[in-house]
Image (cartoon, rainbow, N blue to C red; front, side):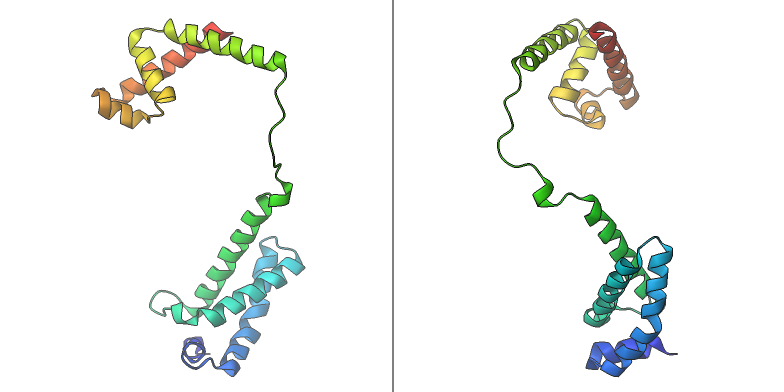
Length: 174
C-alpha cells in the first residue's frame, strides 16, 4: 500500500478514512512490537494509542526522504516506550520527602568535624604540586582539562598527580 499518500492525506486534509486504514494496519503491529520489547499488554495498548494519536497530530513532520512510514511509526513507538520507562523510574512528587531535614545527631556532627579536620591535615601534608591540583579539582570544581589549560601542564601529568594525591590521602585517612 502507499502509506506515504495516506500520511499526506492525513496531513493535508485530516482524512479520517486514511487514518483508519493506517491505524488498522499499524496499531496491532506496534502493540506486538511493544509487547515483544517487554511491555505489558495494557501498557502496550496505551502506548500504541499514544503513538497513533501522535501520528494524527504530527503527520506534517513525516518526511519520506528520511524514512519509510513504518520506520517513522516504529521510531515514535520506541521513543514513547523509552519515555514511559524513564517516567516509571523517576519518583513521583508525592514519594519525595518534603520539609526540613531532621537535625543530625551530635555524634554525627562531631565525627564529621573530626573527619574534616583529618582531611584538612592530610591535604596540607601533600607535596605542593599534588595539593595545588587537589584544591583546584575538588574545591575549585575544575575539570582535569580546565586545570591543564590553567596550569599549562599536560593532561596526563594532571591525572597522575591527582591519582597519586588521592592514594596518599586514602592511606593517611585509614
